[in-house]
Length: 253
Length: 288
Picture 1 (cartoon, rainbow over the protein chains, first blue to last red):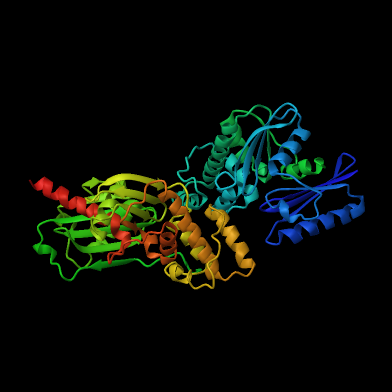
Picture 2 (cartoon, rainbow over the protein chains, first blue to last red):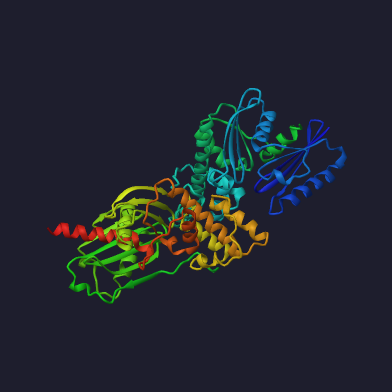
């Protein structure tokens, strides 16, 4: 039994393959502007790598904001369904799934059976999504990968006035001019994003255990800020950006 | 250094017709905004001079620079002023002001002077905010709403696009009409997302001006959404830097079906002008 999940996100396309209940492959590629071709090519490559022929595939489920481009999918599900399925399958004790991607954030509350009770989405505004941090890392001239670790070096609390990423960029530049250490600014940015996410999480309510998925879960400084805000420990899966694709692969019809 | 497409020209202006030394009341208004700063000098309530420049990282310094520039070639000193009012986002940072007044009140007062007392609704489209204001025949604020949280619908958003498209900010209004057909507005609200969307459109082969048109109408639409939350009454005017961008102004007029009044005054000085008008009244009051 071979199940495929394809998650077409704003920044990355993820493909994951489950064979007889085990994840045997996961790959990703930049979404780019030719998302349709990129998704099809990535799928082909992963099949080649794993030596699976197209006829052996039992199901292909697409998800993500660009899921429509996967015209060869046998099923298509929303991000919310994929995220909750993926996270609760990995951790049955999870009741709250927070998914923060490049351009969207969502908070999903599930019951003990992993069924969705309520959810909230932000897809309108970069504040509270990965793009915000990305823009700030650029303004600070530090690689995105180092952003989280750098912010952990600071215990300062500098409130950011700006909510909007465009305005926050100017604010970061002002802070740099005022000789504010980069780690303090990075911490301020993580705190700001965490507080946006927290207000979304509180809107739907949350119950332990809490899991954080999506690419932003690689930002350790952000996790720290979010845990402080929610006053709770958060579960971070390995390869958090693949949880949506994993959930999609699990849902076959 | 790379060309800064967002950068607009700074300037000052002085009347040749007025001799300030013969004036009874010399007043000034200084508007320190998040993006630009203006100083306006009035002699007995007549516009004598003004300056318009970019706000630097140091607000007190910016207010001083704007003031100095408005006084340039006039042999004026700060001591010559009977009253100075500071306004704008950085109004607390005008060290030489006798008083501060909110930019909402100043813009309404300034618009009343610039466009006449028939103005009932104005929208100030500034660098980092957008305010919809209702006022009476005296230029007094009746009601207002503002967006200062989000760059969509502000001058800064247009600057970001000027940079993205490598088109000078002073040309984007005109250029946005140099198209074959009016496109659908950019669908993303967030400027960050709109930038990615625009990059995608360019990749699809859209000419720059068409992308610009799509963003200009998105911006107009965004402002209309704010305007609709207060009642739009005639006469309707636009102040601030975006008032100079016909790409946004014309699309906005079309969407609400109301023409804006036009003025020969510089729309960016409305706030500082209002402040200077308040300063005149306050100077006269102090004298009594």
